[in-house]
Every structure is written in C-alpha cells, then in structure tokens.
Amino acid sequence: MDHDSFTLVFTTAQWCDPGTAMLPIFEETLRDFARLYPKLEVEGTVIDIDDEEADQMAGLPASVDPAILASIDFVPTLILMRGSALEGTEMLRLVGQLPKLVIRAQLAKALGVA
Image 1 (tube, helix red, strand yellow):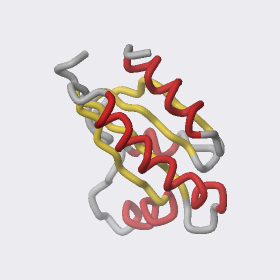
Image 2 (cartoon, rainbow, N blue to C red; image 1 turned 90 degrees about the vertical axis):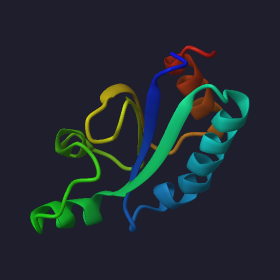
Image 3 (cartoon, rainbow, N blue to C red; image 1 turned 120 degrees about the vertical axis):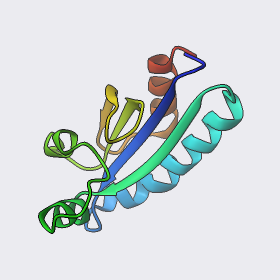
Image 4 (cartoon, one colour; image 1 turned 180 degrees about the vertical axis):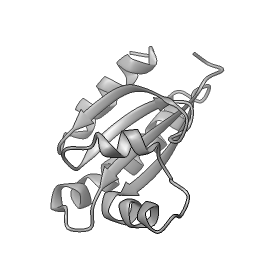
C-alpha cells in the first residue's frame, strides 16, 4: 500500500457539538499518521455537510463524491477513501464521536499497518 494515496474525510456540521469536539482529534490523527507511517500518503479534508449541500444546490463543484455525501446519516462521520474524496473508493467508515485511540486503531487496521 505504500504507493497508494488515501483521503480521510471528516464530515460534520456547525451545529454538531460532537463534531466540534472531534475536530482536534481528526487533526491529531493526521499528524500522528504522517509521523508514524511516513510512507503512507494520507490527506485530510473536513466537509461541513450543510455548506456542501448548499454549494451543490448552487451549482458549485463538489468537494466530496455526492453519493458519499448522500450516504451520511449521522455526524460526525469519518470516511477513509483510497484515492481522493471525489473519485476514491471507501475503505472504512466510523460513525459518531469516538476516542482517538479507537480511530487510530481502526485506521491502522484498514491501512494494513496495525
């Protein structure tokens, strides 16, 4: 997997208190993976579902695959994609407010570095 690129998509909303609490965990996780697994290319993107839906209704380009956005039933949700957020393949989905160590362990397992 060393040559693949991955995107970790964090979906939330401004009104979502658990999402606000998880944002620093998301950012720390990206830094941790860059430090611990430097050969893995893991990018991160934050998607506010309300802003994204408004942008798409206004005809602006999508930041994430619209099918992925439509499949979000609960925020916060973390989605690990092989490739980009627009054209990648979903590998893992974590729903709800989760501890950093749980997120890190699940991501490591999905990426084959556990």
